[in-house]
Image 1 (cartoon, rainbow, N blue to C red):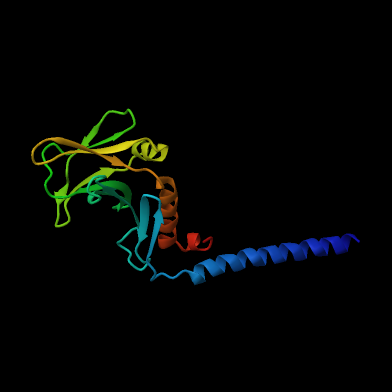
Image 2: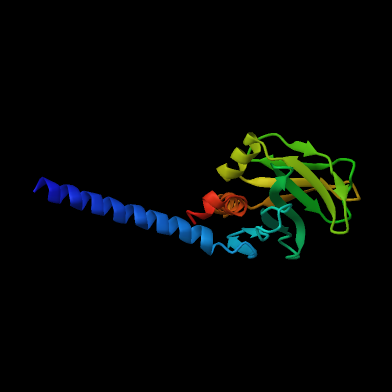
Length: 187
């Protein structure tokens, strides 16, 4: 009887190992390295280029919309720059560059950042996504982008954090799968 139980346990372990191995192989073999993806998470969305685009990375995006005109006023992105997470804000032309751009979450004081450059899309401020900023985003506190127009009058736009946590998890998973066969096994 003991040999029968031992053989059943061995057979069960082999079946379980085969299932896990089959699942892992399916993930690696079935992952399409040429596929790009875009997914929506309430007010945020993620966009990932194909894994074959080695110099590119996934990004999380929120379009800040003016509640009166319903037009996009700013674009907030989280992506990787030289391997580090960065928080970028793209503002349209017609902003005063010298005062920079401010970020405020909840009751915390305003943090001011300078614009890095202006392109054909608009003016961009790039902010390192450190632990404190990441915690503020995850906390879901009210966020605002502060900037000055060409008339030097301050303007505050709300940042929606609806869907941020889900988009952040998807961003991390997608980046891991794009760059590592190990993470593809478990997808």
